[in-house]
Length: 318
Image (cartoon, rainbow, N blue to C red; front, side, top):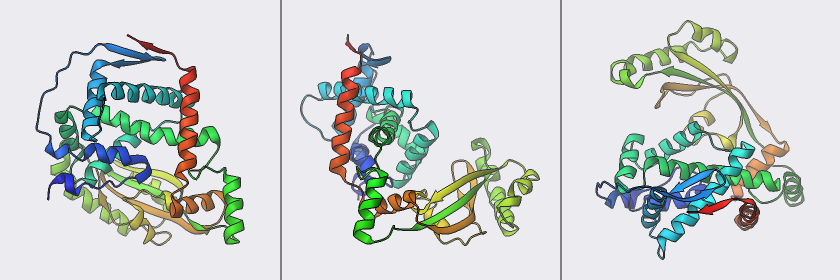
């Protein structure tokens, strides 16, 4: 079976349908050197779109098996992307580099590749890893912007409307588990990974065996070399990271998950507390996790918002 036939995304389906299609033919692409001379093609607000950007997007559209005038479509896609990201930067509702890199790494892992292998494949295909990461950033940021603009959940309703609707249908708010979490990271520099990874795993396992609670973990870590304790804080069950969710769900309150080797080193998560909650936020998250939202309402809001922003945008063709 080819890689293309095996590809499955590990990220939310509604955010990544385009990204999945973009990878379908990736394995069939042979290495090539696309050295386009870039010139400015369009300026959107303060964002410059070059002919090189357009060529990269054309390649992405080809991998999606799209037809028609791909150069024109690529330019239009990039104009819309620039408009969306301009608003994301203005409102600071934008996916961070760390979030994009984490999503990229999960995407690569879901396709049995390391991030470096994925980057190499994208660069060889003519899309470019940086270009694809900005595509990811837009896909992550835009739904948040739309929901903030219309004060809605992903179902297209306001929180109040959604909770009222649930109460009318179900008689009570759905509940979910609220976790208070800490993440303990035994840092492993890339340059020393082969040399010290095994010893760091032993150190992490030893700390887990002596773990007595979140209140003392920061003090405990002070006596250890290159160990970071991150107070993750409140997380509801539907928003747990997919790669950690099964481990967290089977961990008792006051306990820790099994260790996991990551790009940063060796990690485990402490479950400081776990309790059932049924506040409005929990109810909305539970409803959306079970029902995947009303895509038609969200699509209408997205189109309306993009039209508003486009009417205000400064677009200069060169």
